[in-house]
Image 1 (spheres, rainbow, N blue to C red):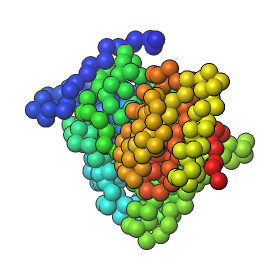
Image 2 (cartoon, rainbow, N blue to C red; image 1 turned 120 degrees about the vertical axis):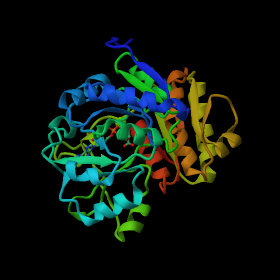
Image 3 (tube, helix red, strand yellow; image 1 turned 180 degrees about the vertical axis):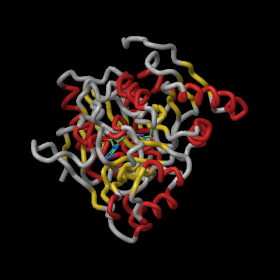
Image 4 (cartoon, rainbow, N blue to C red; image 1 turned 45 degrees about the vertical axis):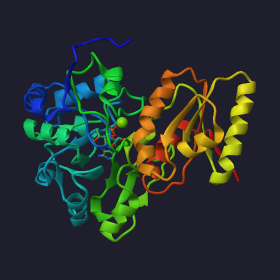
Length: 354
Ligand code: TXA
Ligand code: MG
Protein backbone atom coordinates (compact mmCIF):
# COMPACT_ATOMS: atom_id res chain seq x y z
CA UNK A 1 0.00 0.00 0.00
CA UNK A 2 2.73 2.52 0.97
CA UNK A 3 5.76 3.23 -1.07
CA UNK A 4 8.71 1.28 0.36
CA UNK A 5 11.63 3.64 0.67
CA UNK A 6 13.90 1.58 2.90
CA UNK A 7 14.16 -1.76 4.58
CA UNK A 8 12.92 -1.57 8.18
CA UNK A 9 15.06 -3.55 10.64
CA UNK A 10 13.10 -5.11 13.49
CA UNK A 11 15.01 -5.75 16.70
CA UNK A 12 13.60 -7.72 19.60
CA UNK A 13 14.71 -5.96 22.79
CA UNK A 14 12.53 -7.87 25.23
CA UNK A 15 15.60 -9.97 26.22
CA UNK A 16 18.05 -7.62 27.92
CA UNK A 17 21.05 -9.80 26.92
CA UNK A 18 20.83 -8.74 23.26
CA UNK A 19 19.98 -5.13 23.98
CA UNK A 20 23.47 -3.51 24.22
CA UNK A 21 24.42 -4.46 20.65
CA UNK A 22 21.03 -3.46 19.32
CA UNK A 23 21.08 -0.17 21.20
CA UNK A 24 24.51 0.65 19.75
CA UNK A 25 23.15 -0.06 16.25
CA UNK A 26 20.00 2.03 16.89
CA UNK A 27 22.16 4.90 18.21
CA UNK A 28 24.32 4.64 15.08
CA UNK A 29 21.20 4.94 12.89
CA UNK A 30 20.07 8.01 14.84
CA UNK A 31 23.53 9.60 14.60
CA UNK A 32 23.42 9.06 10.84
CA UNK A 33 20.14 10.96 10.57
CA UNK A 34 17.85 7.90 10.46
CA UNK A 35 14.52 7.07 12.12
CA UNK A 36 14.12 4.52 14.92
CA UNK A 37 10.77 3.58 16.50
CA UNK A 38 11.07 2.66 20.17
CA UNK A 39 8.79 1.70 23.06
CA UNK A 40 7.89 4.16 25.79
CA UNK A 41 5.60 3.53 28.76
CA UNK A 42 2.78 5.41 26.95
CA UNK A 43 2.92 4.46 23.24
CA UNK A 44 5.70 3.76 20.70
CA UNK A 45 7.58 6.85 19.52
CA UNK A 46 9.20 7.50 16.13
CA UNK A 47 12.58 8.98 17.00
CA UNK A 48 15.16 11.17 15.27
CA UNK A 49 18.07 13.20 16.64
CA UNK A 50 16.22 16.32 17.87
CA UNK A 51 19.13 18.62 17.01
CA UNK A 52 19.38 17.41 13.39
CA UNK A 53 16.76 19.33 11.36
CA UNK A 54 17.10 17.10 8.30
CA UNK A 55 16.57 13.94 10.31
CA UNK A 56 13.51 15.42 12.04
CA UNK A 57 12.07 16.39 8.67
CA UNK A 58 12.00 12.69 7.77
CA UNK A 59 9.60 12.01 10.67
CA UNK A 60 6.96 14.26 9.07
CA UNK A 61 7.41 12.53 5.72
CA UNK A 62 7.25 9.01 7.17
CA UNK A 63 4.08 9.75 9.15
CA UNK A 64 2.37 12.01 6.62
CA UNK A 65 2.18 14.58 9.43
CA UNK A 66 1.45 18.28 8.80
CA UNK A 67 4.65 20.24 9.29
CA UNK A 68 3.09 22.75 11.70
CA UNK A 69 2.25 20.04 14.26
CA UNK A 70 5.34 20.02 16.52
CA UNK A 71 7.05 17.08 18.18
CA UNK A 72 7.87 16.13 21.75
CA UNK A 73 11.59 16.05 22.62
CA UNK A 74 12.64 13.15 24.84
CA UNK A 75 15.50 13.33 27.33
CA UNK A 76 17.00 11.00 29.93
CA UNK A 77 18.34 13.50 32.45
CA UNK A 78 16.64 16.54 33.97
CA UNK A 79 19.87 18.53 33.37
CA UNK A 80 19.27 18.26 29.59
CA UNK A 81 16.28 20.57 30.03
CA UNK A 82 18.71 23.51 30.12
CA UNK A 83 19.91 22.94 26.55
CA UNK A 84 16.34 22.78 25.21
CA UNK A 85 14.41 25.28 27.33
CA UNK A 86 15.08 28.70 28.80
CA UNK A 87 13.26 30.25 31.76
CA UNK A 88 12.42 27.05 33.61
CA UNK A 89 9.95 28.06 36.31
CA UNK A 90 10.27 26.38 39.73
CA UNK A 91 6.90 24.69 39.10
CA UNK A 92 8.36 22.95 36.02
CA UNK A 93 11.33 21.73 38.01
CA UNK A 94 9.08 20.47 40.78
CA UNK A 95 6.92 18.56 38.28
CA UNK A 96 9.96 17.15 36.47
CA UNK A 97 11.52 15.92 39.71
CA UNK A 98 8.23 14.35 40.78
CA UNK A 99 6.91 12.77 37.57
CA UNK A 100 10.02 12.06 35.46
CA UNK A 101 10.70 9.57 34.15
CA UNK A 102 6.99 9.32 33.38
CA UNK A 103 4.06 10.29 31.17
CA UNK A 104 4.15 14.08 31.61
CA UNK A 105 5.24 16.49 28.86
CA UNK A 106 6.15 20.07 29.80
CA UNK A 107 5.82 22.96 27.34
CA UNK A 108 8.46 25.62 27.99
CA UNK A 109 10.14 28.53 26.18
CA UNK A 110 12.62 27.06 23.73
CA UNK A 111 16.34 27.56 23.36
CA UNK A 112 17.60 28.73 19.96
CA UNK A 113 19.45 25.40 19.49
CA UNK A 114 16.16 23.55 19.02
CA UNK A 115 15.47 23.48 15.26
CA UNK A 116 12.25 25.11 14.01
CA UNK A 117 11.22 21.87 12.38
CA UNK A 118 10.87 20.28 15.86
CA UNK A 119 8.63 23.02 17.25
CA UNK A 120 6.65 24.02 14.18
CA UNK A 121 8.57 27.32 14.34
CA UNK A 122 6.90 28.20 17.66
CA UNK A 123 8.89 29.76 20.48
CA UNK A 124 8.04 26.89 22.83
CA UNK A 125 9.26 23.32 23.07
CA UNK A 126 7.55 20.22 24.53
CA UNK A 127 9.86 17.96 26.58
CA UNK A 128 9.48 14.72 28.49
CA UNK A 129 11.53 11.94 30.05
CA UNK A 130 9.96 8.57 29.21
CA UNK A 131 9.83 5.82 31.85
CA UNK A 132 10.51 2.81 29.61
CA UNK A 133 13.93 1.17 30.17
CA UNK A 134 14.48 0.74 26.40
CA UNK A 135 13.66 4.41 25.70
CA UNK A 136 16.03 5.53 28.45
CA UNK A 137 18.78 3.18 27.27
CA UNK A 138 18.39 4.44 23.68
CA UNK A 139 18.62 8.05 24.86
CA UNK A 140 21.73 7.21 26.86
CA UNK A 141 23.32 5.33 23.95
CA UNK A 142 22.59 8.12 21.47
CA UNK A 143 23.76 10.87 23.83
CA UNK A 144 21.34 13.33 22.24
CA UNK A 145 17.76 14.41 22.86
CA UNK A 146 15.34 12.48 20.63
CA UNK A 147 12.35 14.13 18.93
CA UNK A 148 9.52 11.62 18.69
CA UNK A 149 5.83 11.76 17.93
CA UNK A 150 3.71 8.62 18.29
CA UNK A 151 4.93 6.06 15.72
CA UNK A 152 1.72 5.78 13.67
CA UNK A 153 0.67 7.09 10.28
CA UNK A 154 -1.12 10.45 10.74
CA UNK A 155 -4.80 9.85 11.46
CA UNK A 156 -4.33 6.28 12.80
CA UNK A 157 -4.53 5.25 16.48
CA UNK A 158 -1.24 5.52 18.36
CA UNK A 159 0.75 2.25 18.46
CA UNK A 160 0.87 0.34 21.74
CA UNK A 161 2.80 -2.63 20.28
CA UNK A 162 5.69 -2.97 17.80
CA UNK A 163 3.32 -4.77 15.42
CA UNK A 164 1.15 -1.62 15.30
CA UNK A 165 4.26 0.35 14.26
CA UNK A 166 5.13 -2.23 11.61
CA UNK A 167 1.53 -2.22 10.29
CA UNK A 168 1.76 1.55 9.71
CA UNK A 169 5.40 2.33 8.98
CA UNK A 170 7.25 -0.75 7.63
CA UNK A 171 9.32 0.35 4.64
CA UNK A 172 9.21 4.00 5.71
CA UNK A 173 11.56 3.98 8.71
CA UNK A 174 14.99 2.48 9.44
CA UNK A 175 14.29 0.38 12.53
CA UNK A 176 11.80 -0.69 15.18
CA UNK A 177 12.83 -1.78 18.67
CA UNK A 178 10.26 -4.32 19.84
CA UNK A 179 9.97 -3.98 23.60
CA UNK A 180 6.50 -5.55 23.92
CA UNK A 181 3.26 -3.79 24.86
CA UNK A 182 3.23 -0.29 26.33
CA UNK A 183 2.02 -0.32 29.93
CA UNK A 184 0.10 2.99 30.05
CA UNK A 185 -1.40 2.76 26.55
CA UNK A 186 -2.41 6.42 26.13
CA UNK A 187 -0.04 9.30 25.40
CA UNK A 188 1.56 11.61 27.93
CA UNK A 189 -0.26 14.50 29.58
CA UNK A 190 0.81 17.79 27.97
CA UNK A 191 1.10 20.75 30.32
CA UNK A 192 2.03 24.30 29.32
CA UNK A 193 3.93 25.50 32.36
CA UNK A 194 5.33 28.77 31.00
CA UNK A 195 4.96 31.42 33.66
CA UNK A 196 4.23 28.77 36.27
CA UNK A 197 0.50 28.54 35.55
CA UNK A 198 -0.38 24.94 34.63
CA UNK A 199 -2.50 24.72 31.47
CA UNK A 200 -3.58 21.19 30.54
CA UNK A 201 -3.30 20.90 26.75
CA UNK A 202 -3.87 17.14 26.47
CA UNK A 203 -5.05 14.74 29.18
CA UNK A 204 -2.83 11.66 29.39
CA UNK A 205 -0.97 9.28 31.67
CA UNK A 206 -0.63 11.71 34.60
CA UNK A 207 -3.96 13.00 35.93
CA UNK A 208 -4.78 16.70 36.61
CA UNK A 209 -5.39 15.75 40.24
CA UNK A 210 -1.86 14.31 40.57
CA UNK A 211 -0.45 17.53 39.10
CA UNK A 212 -2.48 19.78 41.41
CA UNK A 213 -1.42 17.66 44.38
CA UNK A 214 2.25 18.36 43.59
CA UNK A 215 1.84 22.05 42.74
CA UNK A 216 -0.80 22.93 45.30
CA UNK A 217 -2.77 24.69 42.56
CA UNK A 218 -5.36 23.61 40.05
CA UNK A 219 -4.64 22.91 36.38
CA UNK A 220 -6.79 24.72 33.88
CA UNK A 221 -7.93 22.47 31.08
CA UNK A 222 -7.92 24.24 27.73
CA UNK A 223 -10.99 23.36 25.69
CA UNK A 224 -10.54 24.67 22.20
CA UNK A 225 -12.93 24.45 19.29
CA UNK A 226 -12.38 25.33 15.70
CA UNK A 227 -14.29 28.57 15.19
CA UNK A 228 -12.24 30.32 12.58
CA UNK A 229 -10.87 32.80 15.12
CA UNK A 230 -8.16 31.92 17.58
CA UNK A 231 -5.18 29.63 17.08
CA UNK A 232 -5.25 26.48 19.25
CA UNK A 233 -2.94 26.50 22.31
CA UNK A 234 -1.50 23.20 21.05
CA UNK A 235 -1.31 22.75 17.27
CA UNK A 236 -2.31 19.08 17.60
CA UNK A 237 -5.80 20.15 18.71
CA UNK A 238 -6.73 21.42 15.28
CA UNK A 239 -6.08 18.15 13.47
CA UNK A 240 -8.66 15.41 13.20
CA UNK A 241 -7.13 12.69 15.28
CA UNK A 242 -7.91 9.11 14.81
CA UNK A 243 -11.38 8.56 13.39
CA UNK A 244 -12.31 4.92 12.91
CA UNK A 245 -13.25 3.75 9.43
CA UNK A 246 -16.74 2.90 10.75
CA UNK A 247 -18.73 5.70 12.46
CA UNK A 248 -18.36 5.46 16.25
CA UNK A 249 -21.27 6.37 18.56
CA UNK A 250 -20.23 7.19 22.11
CA UNK A 251 -22.98 6.63 24.69
CA UNK A 252 -22.75 8.53 27.98
CA UNK A 253 -24.96 8.42 31.05
CA UNK A 254 -25.61 6.69 34.37
CA UNK A 255 -24.11 3.19 34.40
CA UNK A 256 -27.41 1.45 35.15
CA UNK A 257 -29.02 2.94 32.05
CA UNK A 258 -26.25 2.32 29.53
CA UNK A 259 -27.04 -1.38 28.87
CA UNK A 260 -30.64 -0.70 27.78
CA UNK A 261 -29.67 2.24 25.59
CA UNK A 262 -26.75 0.47 23.91
CA UNK A 263 -28.82 -2.70 23.31
CA UNK A 264 -31.59 -0.56 21.78
CA UNK A 265 -29.15 1.23 19.47
CA UNK A 266 -27.44 -2.02 18.47
CA UNK A 267 -30.79 -3.72 17.67
CA UNK A 268 -32.01 -0.70 15.69
CA UNK A 269 -28.91 -0.59 13.50
CA UNK A 270 -28.84 -4.37 13.11
CA UNK A 271 -32.44 -4.35 11.86
CA UNK A 272 -31.23 -1.92 9.24
CA UNK A 273 -28.76 -4.57 8.12
CA UNK A 274 -25.61 -3.01 9.63
CA UNK A 275 -22.71 -5.01 11.08
CA UNK A 276 -22.50 -3.44 14.52
CA UNK A 277 -19.53 -3.84 16.90
CA UNK A 278 -19.51 -2.81 20.56
CA UNK A 279 -16.61 -1.34 22.54
CA UNK A 280 -17.40 -2.06 26.18
CA UNK A 281 -16.22 -2.61 29.71
CA UNK A 282 -16.11 -6.23 30.86
CA UNK A 283 -19.13 -5.59 33.09
CA UNK A 284 -21.33 -4.22 30.31
CA UNK A 285 -20.17 -6.91 27.87
CA UNK A 286 -21.30 -9.51 30.40
CA UNK A 287 -24.69 -7.81 30.77
CA UNK A 288 -25.26 -7.41 27.02
CA UNK A 289 -23.77 -10.63 25.65
CA UNK A 290 -23.49 -11.17 21.89
CA UNK A 291 -20.49 -11.44 19.61
CA UNK A 292 -18.59 -8.59 17.93
CA UNK A 293 -17.61 -7.09 21.28
CA UNK A 294 -14.21 -5.52 22.04
CA UNK A 295 -13.59 -5.41 25.78
CA UNK A 296 -11.46 -2.57 27.11
CA UNK A 297 -11.28 -3.85 30.67
CA UNK A 298 -13.02 -3.51 33.97
CA UNK A 299 -14.97 -0.28 34.56
CA UNK A 300 -13.30 0.16 37.91
CA UNK A 301 -9.80 -0.33 36.49
CA UNK A 302 -8.99 2.84 34.56
CA UNK A 303 -5.40 1.73 33.90
CA UNK A 304 -6.71 -1.38 32.14
CA UNK A 305 -9.15 0.69 30.02
CA UNK A 306 -6.28 2.96 28.93
CA UNK A 307 -3.83 0.12 28.27
CA UNK A 308 -6.23 -1.65 25.88
CA UNK A 309 -7.72 1.38 24.10
CA UNK A 310 -5.59 1.64 20.95
CA UNK A 311 -5.30 -2.11 20.46
CA UNK A 312 -9.11 -2.35 20.56
CA UNK A 313 -9.57 0.55 18.12
CA UNK A 314 -7.06 -0.98 15.70
CA UNK A 315 -8.83 -4.35 15.90
CA UNK A 316 -12.16 -2.69 15.14
CA UNK A 317 -10.62 -1.03 12.07
CA UNK A 318 -9.51 -4.46 10.84
CA UNK A 319 -12.94 -6.04 11.50
CA UNK A 320 -15.97 -5.95 9.22
CA UNK A 321 -17.85 -3.59 11.57
CA UNK A 322 -19.83 -0.92 9.72
CA UNK A 323 -20.76 0.89 12.89
CA UNK A 324 -19.28 0.99 16.41
CA UNK A 325 -21.12 1.75 19.64
CA UNK A 326 -18.82 2.62 22.55
CA UNK A 327 -19.56 2.86 26.26
CA UNK A 328 -18.63 6.14 27.93
CA UNK A 329 -16.87 6.35 31.29
CA UNK A 330 -16.88 8.98 34.01
CA UNK A 331 -14.16 11.51 33.21
CA UNK A 332 -12.02 11.00 36.28
CA UNK A 333 -8.42 9.87 36.73
CA UNK A 334 -6.92 8.06 33.73
CA UNK A 335 -10.41 7.71 32.19
CA UNK A 336 -10.18 11.44 31.37
CA UNK A 337 -7.56 10.58 28.74
CA UNK A 338 -9.54 7.55 27.52
CA UNK A 339 -12.68 9.69 27.12
CA UNK A 340 -10.70 12.45 25.36
CA UNK A 341 -9.60 9.93 22.69
CA UNK A 342 -13.08 8.31 22.44
CA UNK A 343 -14.75 11.72 22.01
CA UNK A 344 -12.30 12.59 19.26
CA UNK A 345 -13.05 9.25 17.56
CA UNK A 346 -16.81 9.90 17.87
CA UNK A 347 -16.76 13.50 16.63
CA UNK A 348 -20.33 14.72 17.00
CA UNK A 349 -21.80 11.22 17.49
CA UNK A 350 -22.11 11.49 21.27
CA UNK A 351 -25.40 10.32 22.79
CA UNK A 352 -26.28 11.29 26.35
CA UNK A 353 -28.73 9.07 28.25
CA UNK A 354 -30.64 11.02 30.92
O1 TXA B 1 3.30 9.88 25.22
C1 TXA B 1 3.63 10.66 24.33
O2 TXA B 1 3.56 11.88 24.48
C2 TXA B 1 4.11 10.05 23.00
C3 TXA B 1 5.42 9.33 23.28
C4 TXA B 1 6.06 8.81 22.01
O3 TXA B 1 6.27 10.16 23.99
N1 TXA B 1 4.27 11.07 22.02
C5 TXA B 1 3.22 11.68 21.43
O4 TXA B 1 3.58 12.58 20.44
O5 TXA B 1 2.06 11.47 21.72
P1 TXA B 1 2.56 13.18 19.37
O6 TXA B 1 3.41 13.86 18.38
O7 TXA B 1 1.69 12.11 18.86
O8 TXA B 1 1.78 14.24 20.14
C6 TXA B 1 2.46 15.43 20.54
C7 TXA B 1 1.49 16.53 20.76
C8 TXA B 1 0.90 17.10 19.49
O9 TXA B 1 -0.49 17.21 19.64
C9 TXA B 1 1.56 18.48 19.39
O10 TXA B 1 0.71 19.43 18.81
C10 TXA B 1 1.85 18.79 20.85
O11 TXA B 1 2.23 17.57 21.39
N2 TXA B 1 2.98 19.73 20.99
C11 TXA B 1 4.28 19.54 20.64
N3 TXA B 1 5.01 20.64 20.89
C12 TXA B 1 4.18 21.55 21.43
C13 TXA B 1 4.33 22.89 21.91
N4 TXA B 1 5.51 23.50 21.86
N5 TXA B 1 3.23 23.52 22.39
C14 TXA B 1 2.04 22.90 22.44
N6 TXA B 1 1.82 21.64 22.00
C15 TXA B 1 2.86 20.97 21.51
MG1 MG C 1 0.23 11.16 17.92
